[in-house]
Image (cartoon, rainbow, N blue to C red; front, side, top):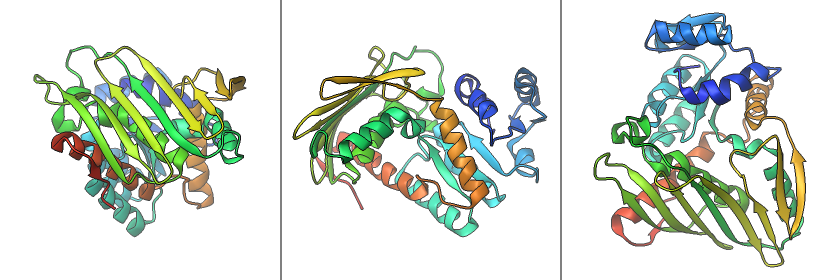
Length: 317
């Protein structure tokens, strides 16, 4: 793992340690003291005092990158050039141009690169997609999706414009990815309004409309609103509701045409690591590679362009 993030401590390191096909060899930090503290906490074999030192270790097949957004492109490329496969936290890069660079490096080096949208591997979304594809609610016409939480106004990488902070890239990317996932298509145009903080110079919230060939997605995100997540799929004949789309409990409920279904699944982070590990060991491509991430970033870029222009913009192909 490159970087010692608190998110990784809570979510992804436990998932790696619980994944049968993953052996977590060590963590790298710019501070050997911090990496050693992480290593002792999780009883890891190695602690690295720099990212470069980790990339030089021939025993390591893959790296997981939970660094701040603005550092993703550099360390994805450096890891790929070192022959390491890469699972990187969302967003894969800060914009579509960077994502195109990553896709080129992946093609040239042959390494596997995947963006860590863990929610796509959970049973509730697989069930919802199955119901949608079987015609249970008819053709999808409208998607409504939210992700917001109150972020304390204290120093935080999410408030750094230099590190590609802001609510859109941090949590708005989830509703955007869900719209693309369920429509199985790319948006044609976007209209969005955003709120930018005068002190931190990053977006604190966004509301947007994404037009697809067969329907529309209404999305919102925020750092200055209470915690709220939601996903609704509205078809010609019915509705699927997913109250906890991004961070479900071990036992979660989705509602299909007013009929609740209780689902149990292992950690979606474990499922994500297992999938990526399988791709490496078997030589198959991930379900969601850098090409998918490039399309995701094009949609996010369009949201920023719409906010700046105050008008509807086309999603640049």
